[in-house]
Every structure is written in structure tokens, then in C-alpha cells.
Image (cartoon, rainbow, N blue to C red):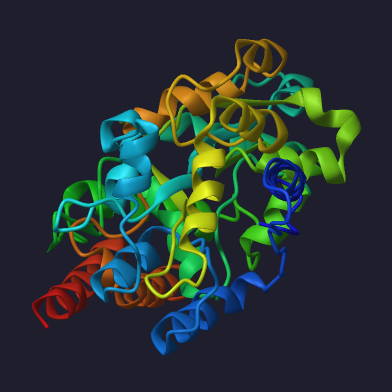
Length: 381
């Protein structure tokens, strides 16, 4: 949050605003690499020596809640006039079995499809609205120039968390899932259809092969890929990598058949053993103020915790953002539904079988059946 190009400007402003309002208080901006953060925080939380604020994502939030490592925020939220219904639906993830609220949305990233409209127009192509049209655009672009692709998604042997995060919104948009309401559904007709579509795109060379999300997002920003399923943070990447082309990019709903999508949600939470809970709560409440909710949109291009906080002026200047706002009600957590605390095991299983799908001759149906068996066993245990 302190160093990423889409988040850092907002948080530096938040820090300055907090310290100005609360004389003598310091909001410490320690930077911990993203790949180390969750494990390091869990160690500190478990040892009783945590920081005053933590920023878990969906699966981690549920795991820390279940382990009794977080402080309920209800007293402070109630005093300030907030309840769970005053937040976007994704904040339901922070409701514990005791009915208390253990976190508020820090950032929410509903996945939509971002499109390089200019690239398509230069080749006489329309924005695709179905899986078949995505494939047709991909075929025509790649035929015109082998260095161009109509679409990209994870096509490398990569870590479980990013692989799962890239795959889930596509599967959900097809109408499928890997886990739904605590039950494995990996070999449902809709999930198999999604896997078949991705495998065909990969095997036919219509998506860049051997690339992780960091690589193909940059290629997208540089005008080499026409469309991605991604969150609004991609616009910050484009602004950094290719600012002169920013107006070439728009956002549209996912084109795979349903309005369903996924969202990776980051929360702000207070550890149970935090030393400065009252100060930490003031940071949470500052984040929820109208001024800072609007600044979050304006400075980070992310959907905030409270609905109705997107400035009209921002949407007028950035019309693509309306697609992101419209996706919020249909955005389901990237964590496996009903068993969020089992996310690491589910993500690992899905990733291994997805790599089997891409890099062997196994059919989508066979891969989905094997994944279904493994997920069923994980959930049963």
C-alpha cells in the first residue's frame, strides 16, 4: 500500500492528513514486500506483538478472524454511525460468526474487461461481447501481426495466489466456480466450458504463452494486447508505463455470458493485541469519511467501502470507471465461497490442475474431474 503506484499517493495523503488532524500522532509507513506480508503479519499476530493496523485480503481476513486475532470494530463504527449495511456488499466478508465486524474495505477491485479501443479500431475490429468474439478478435489481430494478441491470461507456471486470482473471474463470468457455498463444483458444465475455452486459446497460440500477469499487464499497457480481465489498478500501470496512450483504454463488462465476476478485496483491521487500538480506530474512521472515500477514487481509481462515494466529476473525466462501479454488486469475493479460510489449499489445487490443463494433452473435462475429487477431499477434511 505504501509503495504500489496505484495506492501510494493516497496513503501518503492519508498519512499527512491523519498526522495534521492528530497532533503528536504518527502513522508509520513501513514497507513489507507483498509476497512476505501475510506470513509476517500472521507471525506477529500469533506472538501477541502485532502492528496497530493490518491490511488482510479476503482469505487472510477470514483466517485471522477465525483464529481470534482481530478486534471487533463495532464500538467505533456504531459511535460514528456506520453499520454493515452502509458498506458495499463485499464488506460482508468481514462479518464474524458472532455478528461483529472485523474489518472495513480498504480497496475493492471488481474484475472487468479492459480494452485497448484504439488498437481494435486500427485493425477494423469491434469490441468483443462474447467468448466467440474474443476468439475472433484474437485470431484476426494475431494473423495481422504475430506480436499482437487479442486477449491474455495466466499462461505460465506461477504461484497459486496470482494464478487463481486471474482464473476465477473468467470462470465466474462463464457461470462456473471451483467452490460454491462450501461445496466443490469444479466439474460443473459451466466451469468445464470456461476451461475448454482457455485451453483452446492457449493451444492455438491466441494468448501469449509462458507469461505471468506482471508481464502481460505491461504488454497490455504498451499496446501489444487488446484486452485483459483485470481490476481498475491497471489504469495506474498504464499511466506509469505509457501515459500518452491512457485515453486509448476503456472498460467493459466481462464478455463470457453472465454478469458474475470476482473481486479481490483488501481490508483495514485492528489486531486483538494492538497497543494503540484507539489511534488505529481513528485511522479506520478517517478512511470512511466522505472526503477520504472520494480521494481514494480520485487518487487510486479503486472502489471504496461506502457506496455513492464516487465523485461524478471523476466519472465524467474517466468514463471507464462507471463500468467498474456497475460491477460492484455482481463481484463475488475471490476467496472460495463458504470456506474462505481454506483458500490456500483450494488455490494450490486449482493452480496445479490448471497448469496440467495448459501444459499437457489432458482434456478440460478430465482435469476438472480430477480437481473436483481433490477439492472434495480438501473440504471434507
